[in-house]
Image (cartoon, rainbow, N blue to C red; front, side, top):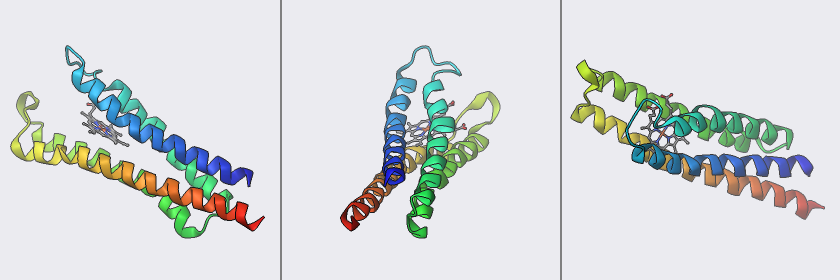
Length: 142
Ligand code: HEM
């Protein structure tokens, strides 16, 4: 029971970290002057906090004896985070010509970072719902 609560708590933190990414993206966009550090909060939360929470939540899901499908689904936000990084890498390769000028094609790719970001939040919300269902199934069985 306790471990199921911890699982739900970790997914809640993951959801909060994902939501904060949008806030930190805006903080980065409005920072003046723009420097290499403008997106420091977004990059740190995205590269460290979110993936660590995703891994901890998945371990907790396994320890909480969640069905295999739910354990795998708990890892989905991390898989989408990899896509999130790949979008930036690919967009930068294409747009990283002389003087780091973006092109229409690189911007079309980089813009997908926001779309995939919304998708990550949606999927994380669904993981939250299933984690809570798993917790209430344990309470009902008591
Ligand atoms: C409107 C939504 C978003 C915008 C506008 C946005 C924008 C950006 C920008 C401009 C960067 C580059 C930062 C830099 O140069 O250091 C970045 C990096 C990153 N973003 Fe987002 N982001 C958004 C949503 C998200 C979400 C929801 C996640 C994950 C939950 C995420 C994860 C990341 C990660 C991991 C990086 C670092 C990539 C790397 O290693 O270079 N972003 N984002």
